[in-house]
Image 1 (cartoon, helix red, strand yellow):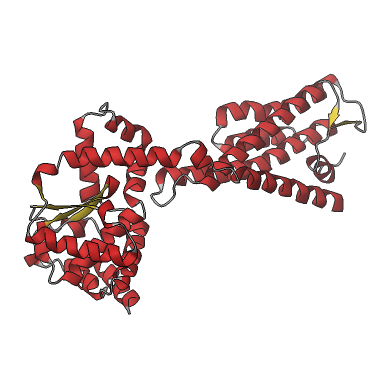
Image 2 (cartoon, one colour):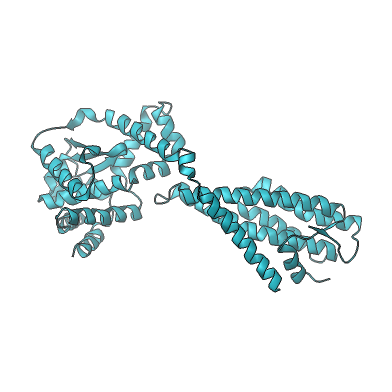
Amino acid sequence: MKKTILQAFILLSLAAGIYLLISRVNWMKLFRIEKMTDALEQKLGDMVWAGMEEQSIEEGKEYDRVDSLVTAICKSNGFKRDKIKLHIMGDSEVNAFALPDRHMVVHTGLINAVHNNDELSGVLAHEIAHMELSHVMKKLLKQMGYTLLISITTGEAGGGAIKELLGMLSSTAYDRKLEKDADIKAIEYLKKAGISPNGFADFLYRLGEKDGSLGSLSWISTHPDSKERAKYIREAGR
Amino acid sequence: MSSTFTYHPTETEAEKASNSYLMSLIAIMVGFPLPIINLMATLFFYIANRKSTYFVRWHCTQALLSQLSLFVINSIGFWWTVSVLFKEDTQISNPYMAYVITVFVVNVVELGMTIAAAINTRKGHHVSWWFYGPLTQMMCKP
């Protein structure tokens, strides 16, 4: 009996040893997985953005306002501001979203819906968190897969696939856990930037109430349970 | 490792004992990457032969025990792969890659051992694996 237990222990140790030995090799680098994903993300970002570029507002009062808030968050958190490609879109829909390769799109509808810069900063920090935590590519890889994404970049999937991809990123939510992760990170960013997360919570609460004065609420329809989020953001902000 | 059994098995016994290993081999081809298929095939063969002669029962038990541990290892790999494919917060990572390669290595080793055991038992030789052999000995009585 003792001998069998000893043999079981040796066998398990051997299996664990093989695993530990194999995990010493950087397989991600060996199979170029990270490099491939980065290149794919860059190409997708360029392609999606090329289709939206015409509607973009790249200067003016609204752009400067958002730009200064994004710069403040980046500066306080040690992010390179020039890595984020900020775009303001003339659209009445209350929406903001991140695209591959760090393109961040903010609708004028959102800028008009917020009551102050703290509220706007909250939404921006949330979108920056999605980018920093690589949620955009995680979502695309899960929902479309490597093969389809590669065929989009080579043009094999056709123009419709780009529209589908854009629709997915601008009008559907991330996984509940990823949304919460982005909220928690956003609070961290806001605190470091000296901005109260209460503004973000207030905005979410108002969206949760579905305030008629806010117009079309895309951002909220893609981010469920706003009141619950407002609650934990307020708690975490204390 | 090949050793002496308490008695010399007949031709029919040797064939049945060899088949218990072949069961898991056939199941590997059909079931991979669904790990439950291998276990089920060996389990059904074990149940069908639980009242058979000692030599046949002994080898059915050893085959089943080896498949049981393989089932655990493969199941972890299977569900990890499912979460990599379908969950947004799980990604391909170095630990995942290392685990998949480990699973592959373990399966290849087990495949080799199973083929060798199937050939040897078919010849009427008694094959007792390290750890699984003594464990089978404890569970399977004449």
